[in-house]
Figure 1 (cartoon, rainbow, N blue to C red):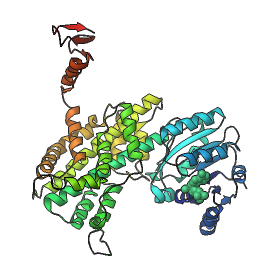
Figure 2 (cartoon, helix red, strand yellow):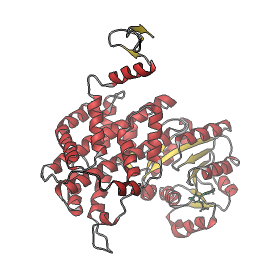
Figure 3 (cartoon, rainbow, N blue to C red):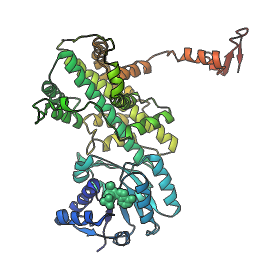
Figure 4 (cartoon, helix red, strand yellow):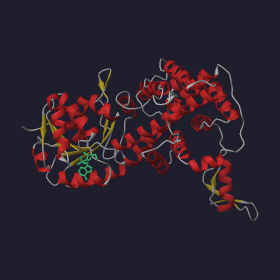
Length: 472
Ligand code: 2AM
């Protein structure tokens, strides 16, 4: 029997993807370095569809119909390179290796170039939705050559999540585009979670609401503009009681947020590209800060206000602040995709990215439909904030947003996400920015020159001499 597609690396994600293909009627070759995992998959789930198990890489590759399509689901890094080499050595021109792990897009670009030299396709593919998504329909972000997508795409679209009948899978662009977009998706997820955490913190500190009362607030919010998977599960987590102690679950969890690295990668890339992704950066740094118990202990006695802000309207204000800050965070993430698309010549369709994030992935939300509509209306939109629908949402939210940031500062609750999003909003809409003064200072101490508002060219003022201005 020849298989339509193969999966090697049968830990949870790989196993669930293989089962997803099988359940959709595809013949799936399966392989794992340690054969017991392959046997376990067949024993437990063999009845779900048509699996072709292999004990060796040779067998695995030869069980695939040409052009061969082999998905790698192993640890990112050297393991991925090792498995690529094992497969590539046994493949023929036109065959495809699909990396479904969370690889860095620069690694994907390197691997794609190397395999292209050998006549093979390498399709770095972002897959979001965790274990559950892999089994029941993830959001899939494949990069690589358009030619590879022609035969691979229909298979991936089959197993992807569907929203209104549209698969959450589209060819993102060449080489590393898929992994890049997946990285930014994860960065946005960091920002989203940070904003949710700030909302919870403020409601608890300012109003003295209990976690279960705040769970009800989130449940209510999930019926409106904020409707999303993350808001939904926030209600679940806040409403959960620890069985061992009877206390709210959030109160028994150590308050140090960990990270696997995709948020950090997003910010590193944004720094390189020169895109201000302040929302994602604040989220990454908030996690870093939480993970420094020594400094936190040393700072505990520092002066701060003691206070609450018992004003019932704060609940609605926080909802507005959350929505407005979320618009900013997404606008910044899409700016980063735009910048990378230009830098690497990917020609990414931003509306299509919003479309494939509507289902299957962690940031799935009603909101993404609005982003898609915005880019459909104006594919060259310079910033999402300028879309008429978002602009009016921000106009409706801004008074509340300002009150929330002011209240938080007054009672000493840190809201880096809300505050920096508001600062970004205010900076972007400014007629004149104090960047002019920064330019003056740079010219003063380093003769870095400046441009004038009224004349072409670069200029330098002789600050230490006659203070005459000369063309640079
Ligand atoms: P294993 O079951 O043999 O450990 C997640 O760790 C998955 O990646 C597992 O299926 C694991 O296989 C596989 N994996 C990790 N390192 C690997 C390597 N160097 N070569 C092949 N598979 C590897």
